[in-house]
Image: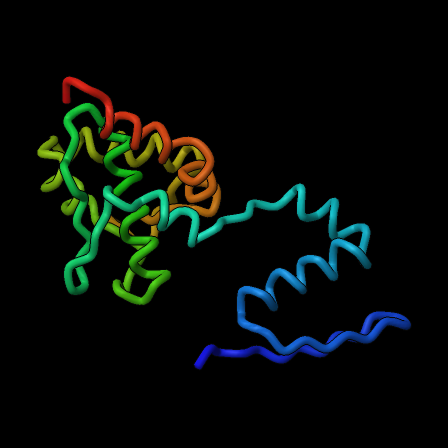
Amino acid sequence: MTEKVIIKIKYKHIEKTITASPEETWRFLRGFFKEFIPSYKIAEKLTINVNIQKIAKECEGLIVYLSDQPIILKPNKKLTDTETILLWLLAYYLGNEINIIESKSISTDFFQSKLKKSRKIIITRLNELAKNNMIKKISASDYALTYLGISLMQKEILSKIKLKYTSKNR
């Protein structure tokens, strides 16, 4: 049995009701606002949109989850420290979004153990990413992706990482 959402919208003289799956309901709502609220079209162009399903599909073959732990398949030496950090943060973000992992954030100690680099190098990379608003500091030593970071992973960085995984001479 498919989950259904019921929504009733009243806007000025227009009234609409929909009973549909969550995805169909979301598409209906977006279409409604695009059609009836012109300023929404402008606002939509100025906002960051993240498509979790698309990102998850792009991560097939890169990330898997074992119990409550993400695993980066085939660690690739061609990835930069920054790309590796972003990929791990994306794995935790996705895991949290699909309710496999409790937290979206990762500690500097975790990165140090995975990248086998000094704490100073790890902190430098994290600070660079934070300075560019790709990640944010959650606590004294924990970091998570920002919406900008997730969006850039979706639009640009993930495809570059995938190319490095599939390129010859690994």
